[in-house]
Length: 207
Image (cartoon, rainbow, N blue to C red; front, side):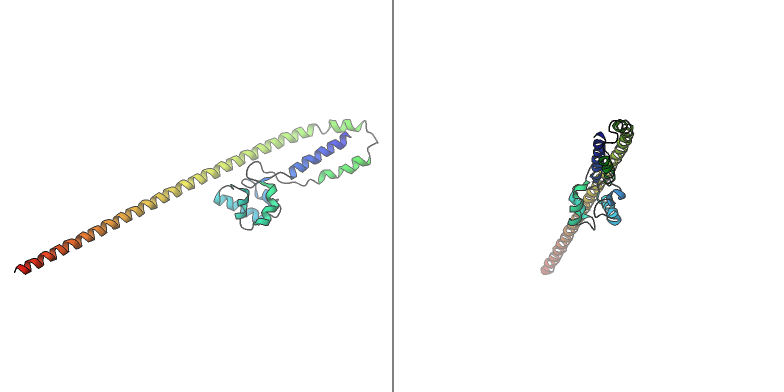
């Protein structure tokens, strides 16, 4: 019974990995390709989109990527996330094979075998768990650094855009003032010329 319980626990662990979500803001091309309906071309398109536009702010924003429509989005909706650690989906079918063996021979040595089963698996999960935690921390740190880098770039682009907008507004204002001053000068010149012409006519009349 203990052996069956261990096999069931292993099956749940594999299933948990298979259902892990892929972070579309930090996932690698290989991780994105593992999503249903996403091949190499669409995976690269996702990476190019977030490089150009910064991190995705909503899950449905992925539909802005070329080649990804409503149908594809519905397929991958439950397997993607905006934050967290990306994990490559793995098949959960491997642990299913040993189960029949445990059912086929439950009686040969029920007293001796459970002790071995408990003694041997114990050390392995500790090492694997430690490595998994280290890999998870490394991936989380990288995702955090990438997110900060993207946020800094977005801020810099926004600052530049505002500076360009102010520069354009100042230039437009200066051009408008220049045009107004010129129009005022032209009007004054015409008034002076008219005044001189009128004065000349008055002199001619007097003569």
